[in-house]
Amino acid sequence: MFELHERLAADTHSLGRSRLCDIRLMNDRTWPWIILVPAVAGIREIYQLTPEQQVRLLEESSVLSEGMMKLFGGDKMNVAALGNMVPQLHLHHIVRFEDDPAWPAPVWGKQAAVPYSENELASIREKLRPVLLQLA
Image (cartoon, rainbow, N blue to C red):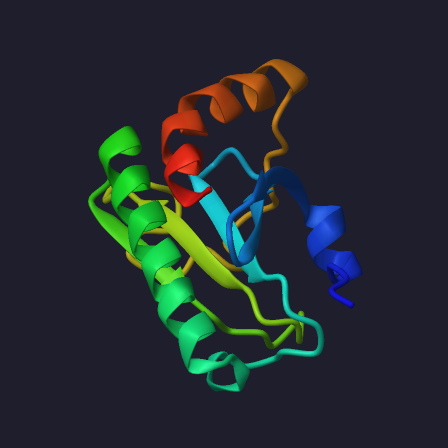
């Protein structure tokens, strides 16, 4: 049975589910940052997914990446599956800007997260709605 890792649950807001993944918004308004978590129990690596699940993850990641870049007009889309702190398979999607606080370095550890206010959270959910509907 799939269960979201406690750290992901604590650091993110739910944006719903796709056919394969739990979709999470990182609670840091510094960057548009969404995480796809395949809803498959006990998976740590992409190669552990079935071939069909691997294809579906790539499709969902591509749709999400393209949609986020169109919405936010970024300079670069960073997609990463690190898993050093959270062993559960999850795929980060971070829109980067050449003038963001960490550019060109990775976003991890550059500054403390800036949480969304309730109004900002409602606004970003609404903005992302067309992209999320494509993942359903």
